[in-house]
Image 1 (cartoon, rainbow, N blue to C red):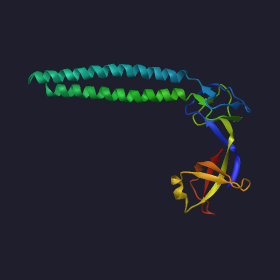
Image 2 (spheres, rainbow, N blue to C red; image 1 turned 90 degrees about the horizontal axis):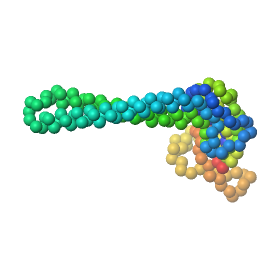
Image 3 (spheres, one colour; image 1 turned 135 degrees about the vertical axis):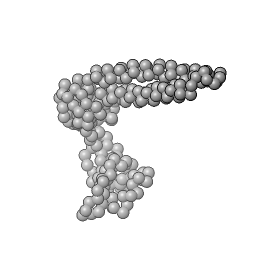
Image 4 (cartoon, one colour; image 1 turned 180 degrees about the vertical axis):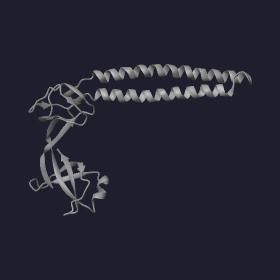
Length: 212
């Protein structure tokens, strides 16, 4: 294999919007969980508030439609002809639609909460800022690189796996690496990435490992 530089990653937002906070600069040391950048959350908070209001209304309607349906069943049980089958079917349909509306809005509220949390870009590990790609108050889009973070405690290693063996990759439970300069010592590693195409020249797949 071939050892590369310490592990580095470009960090980006999952949502789009104008930056309001960019407190880091090249050379800054950060801890896991530190805020590296923040998008204006107002629109995301407003969207969440609207959906939560709609959900509360839908939940109240669902309770009401359930009671209306149960009341229809009680009337029907008292004697034939007091309520029509079509009316009971109508109430059941209204009950089912209101339940579906609650489920849909519950999912939308969950997504809106996630999107609100995504307005904060946090450091995934302790590291050093080695590049910033935007300025504060700039409009950014989802997946646009914002900050490049280096993890000096981990290094990456490129290896080449023969085409005949790459199919076993999903079953690998443990990876160990030995260096000529460290005889008798094995270092635990993790598979970070597996190339999608084999080299035409060597018929091997590139695999990137990460280790402490």
